[in-house]
Picture 1 (cartoon, rainbow, N blue to C red):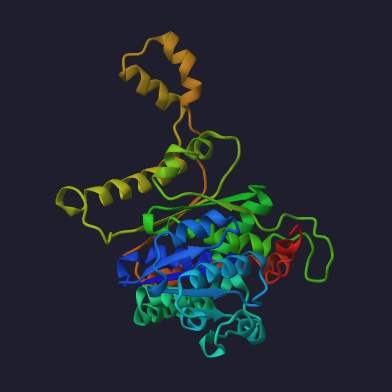
Picture 2: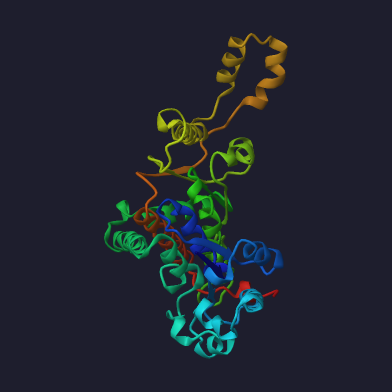
Length: 371
């Protein structure tokens, strides 16, 4: 009845994001994800699990990742306290790894070890065996649909001319603002609750790939590389940080993502909530582009019956400069195939930028440093 994925970084963020996004396609299995080495994360997860009906997926390429193996050992201890036979561990734990010896030493039958290529980086691994929790949660047919969507975007990136190539265009736009306008950050703003973990997933994909200060030859670069990626699902972000995006003195390029159709019929006529959500997204991008001039503010305040003193005092605070850069990515519905396309779109955008910056997007020495 329950699957607990124990992993961290790419062994957690990708599967968690995908399962959250594709909940409308879920089977009867409950998917849980444990990443933080803080014991509270594991303890709170196990509170709702029955050891007799729970499968643990230990996801670690090397099977030595400190946080993952600490959580895995504690999960095994919890299971053994409740299991009738110690050998039952081999029936309730599977491994996603490339280290057969470590898997066997842990007590997992290597027949239940799902391998993948050792050159696959964690942040690009949800397409591989690391995506087992996704496949169990939404079913293999839907998982293959997600793979097919990624493959479609792969082919688009490989064959489309540059002027029509979405990842290349997004990559170039990002370099333009990052290196010529010194923007430093990139906001990812999905107007879909299912994509509420998409920004966190892209934080790793982008910043772990392109957060580098030397080029591929090891020479220090004198230009800005990967941006700080951040954001929140709409409309929550509007009531948190959009003030800074609209009127702050930092230029922040934003990507707005939005499905035209929702999986959920909620409110009047079954689409009231989604209409409001879509209207907010469109209004925000328009407002960021157009802004509001002092003359427009003056006319607005006069129409509201405010006197000259009030107008003189408040007017400067109600002016919006506009000309704030945004990308709007709209799609029909958040399906497994669409999600696959979105993930691959950003993967190739990140790769494009790494090529332009002449950096190695496929190492991550900063992850180990400081542990």
